[in-house]
Amino acid sequence: MPEQTTGPGPGAQGQPGRPLPARRRLTDAPSLQALTHPTRLALIEAIGIAGSLTATQASSRVGESPTACAYHLRTLARLGFLEEAGGGHGPERPWRLAQSGLSIGDSDDEAVTAAGAALSKALLERFIGRIRAFELDRPRLDPDIQTATGLLQSVVFATPAELAELRAELLEVMSRFAGRMDPALRPAGSLPFELVTFVHLLDPRGREPGDA
Picture (tube, rainbow, N blue to C red):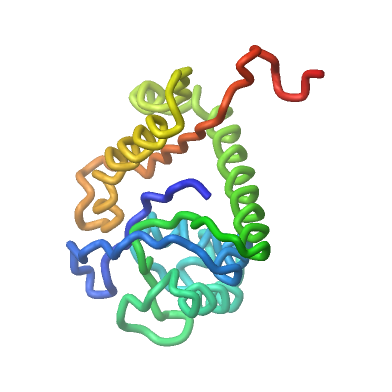
């Protein structure tokens, strides 16, 4: 699972500046399996963008009924992904993220490894689908958005240790904006841009994947 730099939003009282909880490394199968459900992924993303949402508010954003959203929100809260933001009851109870980001931890447990692989696959497909959809719409967007977005690619010759260090540095740079998951801390004109960084190894012989 890619490192996630999403952060929590404000409580129901709209108080800004809630300290970002520690990032969470997922090392148990139930938590990993829970996130493979597309509605739960959509809910976490929607809450990260909005700061906090009730089941009723989330319903229109993820395309599910308030009842279904309430069930998934409670499940995510039980597993520690969400927490109550304060105020409201039932479908009008607001929820917010319970940690500043997520990643998959290493494990010798086959069930955990399988669950982690399934979640990584679900995220990869989700990211690629969004990138494809955005590229179709990109020519119709404002020029300043077109300039700020798009593909960045580079081939880097490095040792695995050096690349791990580079990944950590990139994550640190992106984390500078994590506090803005609190809507009260976003400057005027802010938009929810998504940065997805894939690091993969090229065939040293220059062959394409699938070549004999």
